[in-house]
Image (cartoon, rainbow, N blue to C red; front, top):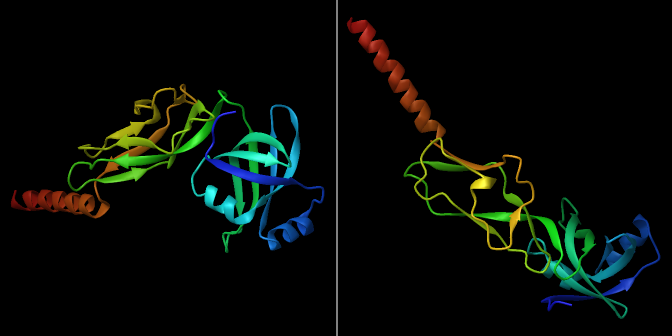
Length: 202
């Protein structure tokens, strides 16, 4: 098994339902399910504080020790209380060393567009295929010097070695460069006023 920084001791659980989940959370633990590779889903309990710290990063890879059995897992979904942001449940995908998985990786914008222009993001993540044990924390997208009207598609991004787009056929716009609305409207108004003045002079 690959050396993994994140490691958690997990317990099997046999009690299910909302009541059981509430008791688990009241005990500062997190209910979770581990699934994948055609196996029966395993319902487990994770330590609350350690789990919360590991979930600060997207696509966390966690080595679980489930009562003596070690499994490699990838965080696929985290359910949180919409008000208190408490972790209510975690879905974990069973993975193997060397396996490629599809994940949504956060986009990090670098550089500055042409002076006065703004960057409008259509999405904050990009779907890629990557080795389960080598998923990048983010994908950098440069907007250096781009002018109004420019846009960057997922296909335009230079991906790290070993990473590929999850869907290479579909065109997905990640971001576009626009002129601030107030300035654009001001220029349009000036143009209209200038045209009206010329007509009046004629």
